Image (cartoon, rainbow, N blue to C red; front, side):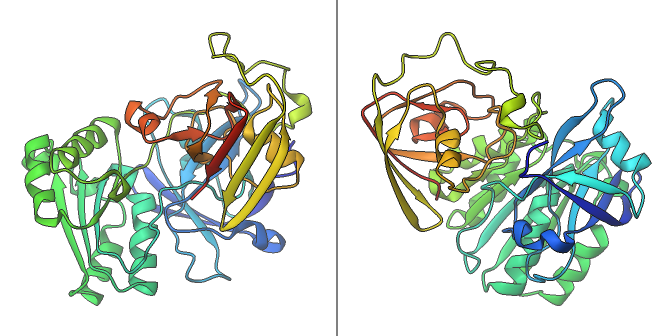
Length: 353
């Protein structure tokens, strides 16, 4: 297994609803590797009799305000979902889980900003972390639109009520129940969001809910830099195996554009630090090259199936071996996946911010 994964002890498994559990993890001696920002996720190794191991990503619902506290992920059982079913039914306090360090870009850049949050079902998980952290460390006002099937399906119902009561001037929670109001339409979502067009919007939930919400925000001309969407797909690869265990070329796309012909001049802005290299080789991904230089670049799946490694292309061109999460608008904005990007020009400049 890769040296980037760690085994954490399960401190508690909390029943949130009939089909959702919060798993409390102790980072222990690995705490320095598990600093995180609100909205990020952990990738978990789940044992499987069929495949030996499956990897799944689950958002953190805890807040990094308590730097010495445990980590909490919240998991909702999905129909025929092996991993979520195992976590909700089999995991017990004292068990050990192998996980990758926190990752993801679904996080506010400014905790003092006014926020408009949309969550559907278990999409509340990263949103809850954002709410808890913003209320504790920031000064902005927060409005949450939270859609669920019925009242019994509302994860964190009591916690949200408590937070709203403690911060009546800063947090407003609007519940939308399908059993009472039907599924929210794009027009209804647009009418709701129209009251808050100056805010930073974050959207997480089932694909149809996110699609309708993002479409509504676009109709209201929310600029791209104030419109954030969390995207997950089931991971097909195994990010817990080492690079040496991977089949050479297994992820390459035969239809990809030809890469740059020689060594490439690379400039990278990562966490406020500027890196510059003149020997990025064609056939090597950005993530692989940075790792070879000892740079701790973010990633999770390594398969182009999540957005943890997202970069913004500032200069030059790259080609991607695979991409299951970025849409045409993302690509037009210069967003690429670092774990899949190979050089396609003599000079490339990117930022992870």
